[in-house]
Length: 335
Image (cartoon, rainbow, N blue to C red; front, side, top):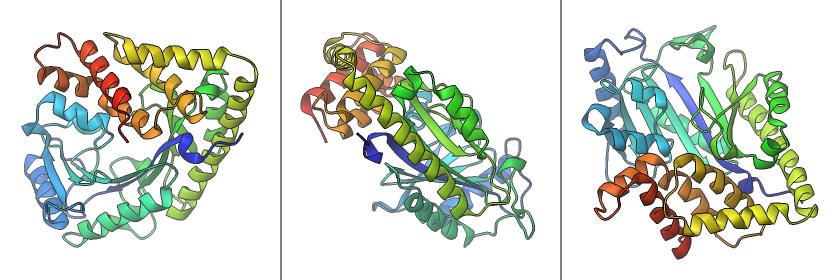
């Protein structure tokens, strides 16, 4: 049983690091420069209400829950939150493209799509970059390529990454060997929210580690090739587990039951049961649309649950609100 890529690859993302040629790198302590970067990006992307228009989010004008909810949707990074006084994001109205302003670099342009679609994500990211460059040129060296605040991002300035759901590789304790093998290819494996984060829900980000000396096409091909290998490895282990008896289906149904009827649940417990449910859905054990399960990945996280609790006065805790959200989605089977 070789699964389809969308049953293991949750999303594809391409991120470009860019800096304006006429400004010093990092705007953390330079509020005037930070404001200029926002103004340039806003002018370049011509904010509008249609699906391809962008909306501006100044972090200093947002409360903590709204900031975190953007991070839970992977529309902004954890690092941007640490620069909330100057940080901003221009997010395309269809949520496929976001431009992070005043993070480590002046701009981080990212495009994210469902499933295995790195070339398509790259096309979206480079289209946004082209618009941004029309207002002001980026810092570029003929030998080194694009110059960035962190030397490991110099060159193409591109990170191509796949978010993969790998529960069986995790349970069979193979992720250590996988991480070492991937590192030899110039790639790295991180947790759900990137560098320094845990692999909650058995979710891993596979991305290129360096950007200098390789073309954009080579980086996309390398990450895609490793992604396909991990899909095959995970598929073999899932087939083996399914043929060995009732342990796998039993675990899946237990998680489905808890998600369907629990009255309170913390974030860590939710992620563990979510992983079991997604595994069961992709293997045909439980009949729930995969889109519903993947929607819950953001909707049942802490910030989203807190916001839901605040808008529903009869809920007494975030953990209770999380269960209401989960059960509403599972009962309606929204697609």
